[in-house]
Length: 99
Image 1 (spheres, rainbow, N blue to C red):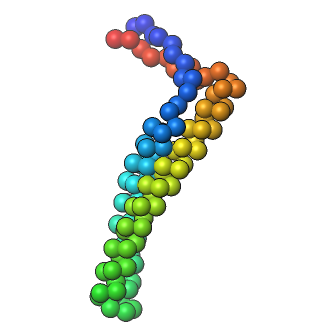
Image 2: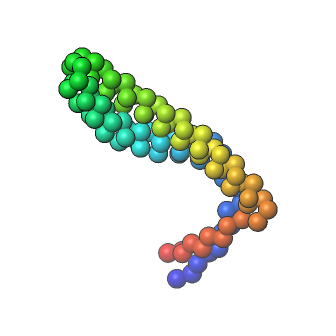
Image 3: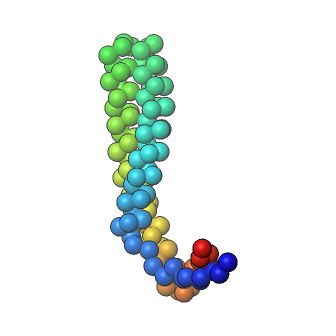
């Protein structure tokens, strides 16, 4: 099979940031579910059912929002640093196989 060589010269900062936001939101959902159950069950034991459920919902919402925001910021920073480093290095070589 023939291979074609390409060079990655630049990444779109916004596209990488949006991808980071989606990944951060997914991680936030998973983390939020785990923490919400832990906090809700602990609060039910110590205080009351209403406070436990409310704090569980709030923990979930905060984790999802923070995951998306921090994922967006992290993706933007990574793309910016990547573009800056590639300007000095000349790009990353990628070999793709043509079928």
